[in-house]
Length: 340
Figure 1 (cartoon, one colour):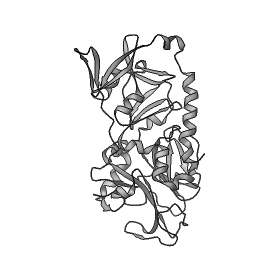
Figure 2: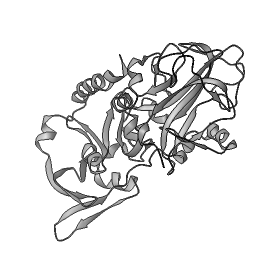
Figure 3: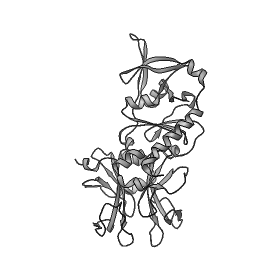
Figure 4: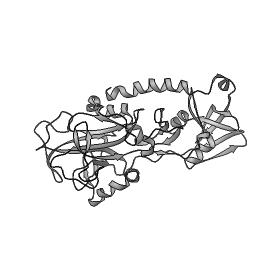
């Protein structure tokens, strides 16, 4: 299945699975709907009173935060994506990077990694959750004369078998690895982090995923109140942390320290370029440290040219940290808009 078709197919599958998880027609018939104010905006009949709790749809919350709601029934995670995290969905990545149209699954789902999408040749691999959310970017380097580096996923001499052959890899995760594992109970995540919400506060129904208003607001660092004049509940819900360099560092604590050995250099169409001292993934950031791009270099002496590379055939430039090499970059923003 090609990348641009991924979200459409998964959406259809998720719809079928949600029907199985409904609470039943009797519960639906007994719903009491009430108005609620979230972040200053009134939602008419926007909350459901069920038992002694008031619930809101995560899809409505995502809209109020100018975000996107994604339910992954396979991993059992409901995501509210805001900021740069919205660019990590397969359909958006494909629009920003047309060459990704040729990406297909090259490995089955692996707990803690996801589903590798890529090519059988040199490329930057993307690990997706079944819902189409990118969970990590990786660079696979096949064995041979390859020197092991401490930021690789494997220990020295411990090669792993990949679609392209035996070798080492480096992954940079953009969501918590625990969210890339199948769970028995539904979890709620804002951007790349799971919220501390008790499963008893979450309802999975035909109409979507609902969460107790109080539990959700408090888990995001907000809170709830009561409008005496209007006689309705109010809540402040905070968005998740955006995908910045600090966020990336907190999700990759073992490897990110190797990027600190060199000052990032500004490069047009990339932003501030963060690199390891040897072969590894490239990360671009804006002035406010939000991530712009993930990339990698492929030595021209040992790598055949491929059409998804940034350069034309035979025009591999000289890089100060890698010699003559081709590059590939996967953008999270329109590269024409990168500039300060």
